[in-house]
Length: 416
Image (cartoon, rainbow, N blue to C red; front, side):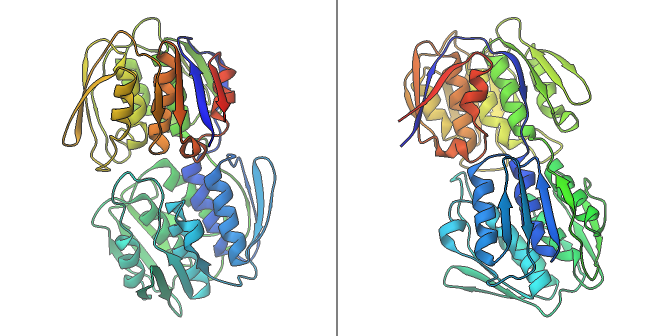
């Protein structure tokens, strides 16, 4: 099993391009099921999750050809509207096939999903929404089986804010008969990016980016070429790494408008930040100051950046308090950071981080995608060698992270 070896103590310096957003690419790939026309999706990140989604679509009968950062897909003849467990278990985003398949083909069978073990992410809101639109749904042998002659527009209130639930129901509503009003929607930039892709395909959507989205169903959607937005979490991870190592880097092709919560906290930590239309430059001249934060749905501080900021706070000046409100098991990286010398105490859904002068290299194990990123940041700061095991988690969400960090001066390598 591959690992990362990091010799810490180097301040990051240089320029790096932000890759396409995994959390926008996956629903946009699922949206290709909504049309029989050819779709060309560009700015796709080279990630295991993206490859798994394309493989899933091919299993259903979608014709697909992939390039380095693009894919051509055509769902003109679906042979099996089924997302099997062997693919779904590695990637929860497979649930995003449920809405498009039901809307266009009148049937879908999707295994109950797997993915990172960071807490409950129930699919009941997807099921309740499709049921409100007229679908008949049964849970059979671990599969969600949905059938519908044609979905009907409905008013749907989601009890909790759910990104994939919002995306699934928005896609399904595009081909439904009549108007669908989705209330208490997720407002994340990736939801907005999906809506923009669907609108380019001919969907009639209003309100994306707000908590109420209205969709007027149409008879069919057309194929388009669409570029996936840059990844705000990857951008934030590079920025946090630069701050923790007291470095200075420039991000290009950055999703500037969606980085506000992260940039605000980095400025509180003492970073000098300069923002252009598609660039962000950060310089941390000394030891970062501890910053407290509370995760929240967008436009709040993203849960996907919580672990990276705990790593930065571990070597910051002062004490910080980080409260996680989205996922109940998202502090599993803390015990691994402690192995490197971090002083962190957990009480319920809050971590108290007491900044230390330095961390010491050790062997640690990644437990989920963003935990992996936090361990990389800690390893970049730590004295001596840090070995990170189970980095397959990292490959799900970061494109060639070690080579891109190496281009910024990090002493990092993939080892057997």
